[in-house]
Image (cartoon, rainbow, N blue to C red; front, top):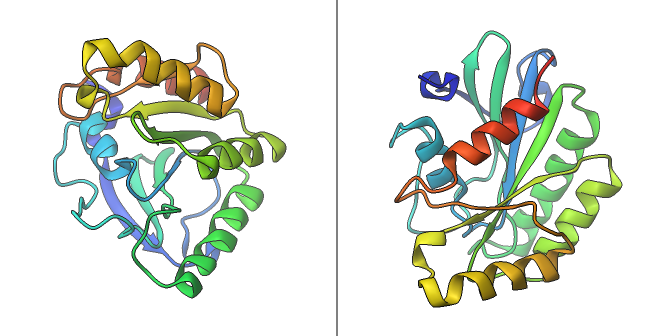
Length: 193
């Protein structure tokens, strides 16, 4: 059994003051509001109700913290881009994400989720920004099961081109489990102490 299967929701935090002590290891999950972050977390942990999934993108508006054990946590960051909320509300999330990634000392990696069929400038800019502040994100192309076999290679190549990367993209499906083991291996490799 993977350690991810022990994941439990701990709390939602509106600021760093509300976060657990900055110790151990944290994996942050970033991505567009409609990239399927909550579904991906649930599938990784084999726990359908771990992260709340909504039909309306943009529901994750706080730092949602999931604990694996005393030493390890997953943090679901607010999504960007698609959310059907006011620009003023969205403008509040950016500083929260920047403060979290800029000041938390124990974030061992960031998982960047992009929708396999839809990639845009926000995704590329976010990856560039993550690299600029010292993170080499694990990039995951979600909803891979929605690509026909004839579309898959072209779509994934296009993603790599737009995002400026070569060969480090993990095709992932919350529905079929595709990519789960590869993502788990990447996280274990990056978050060793």
